[in-house]
Image 1 (tube, each protein chain N blue to C red):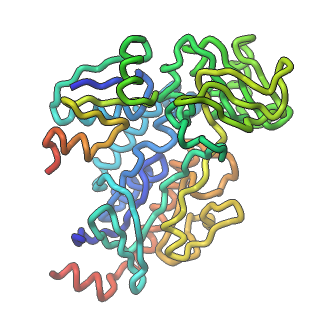
Image 2: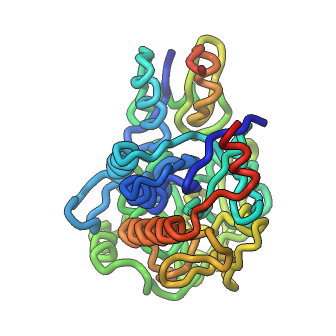
Length: 323
Length: 76
């Protein structure tokens, strides 16, 4: 292990929350490290975004590239890698990033969430072989084909609108008996697709079938007299679960849904540790680029206020810094 | 070197940005439009995820920056 530099704050994650925190921390003149992980988070894969103020129709990837540039321009250092471990040492933190240990007085967890899977047998085997979790990435590969999408939230509606540009037919598999969560404007777009989208309510996928690739699925409720549905591809858009292994190892408290518990200024139960974005449940299921960016800004401000008053280095870090 | 990609795929764009930043010349093949290339990609890798990056005889599925950098001698 190499010993990396000492930072005032280490931001874990580079989606809207992490990069926004980086912009603010940089402008507070904090020595800031952003651990990049999956660049751009959920925003980068969202396609066109119509509800981010000041940038109607902006491409999510481009928006995140701009966030990243702004964070760098504000003074944040950005490295690729994954935070594998973190340790609280006398109130400072040793953070393992790939083959390096970096040190920081504060941590902001903004690592987002991972796409939820269906939890079915052979799902892993069929991943990228008919089963997909990113419409903007793999949707165009099904040009002229028949696909199904599992969901019910806003992301699945946006996914259908994207898929409809390419595919012949879409089966929309929804566990509930109606759609209540998506934005009305997106539901209106969905309605315009007409018969191209066949809605299967109160239905779940119970089995994935195929030889080397997915060939058909078994539905929990019959459609046209059969539970078997032949499709070319299946897209899963059933939300995400927070990535919380490292925060847990530091004793960070979680709520009953597995999200990091924070107060109104994004402070966790551990002094010097903050969290923002999709890893917290601050606005409940309302998880948007604008809310993630706002939470990141608040978390960085709180980390700065803490650093200003309690930012002295512990003995270990002092020793490392004078080597 | 060739990249099999779709226009909206984030990791395809990240791969191309990375190569462009490092001044690497590559051929970009849009498998959303090119059905023959799509079939080739599937046969070559046994899967339908993009990006697929061909560097000589090596094939990389996904934006594996470290491996791409290693094969191209870009890692410092």
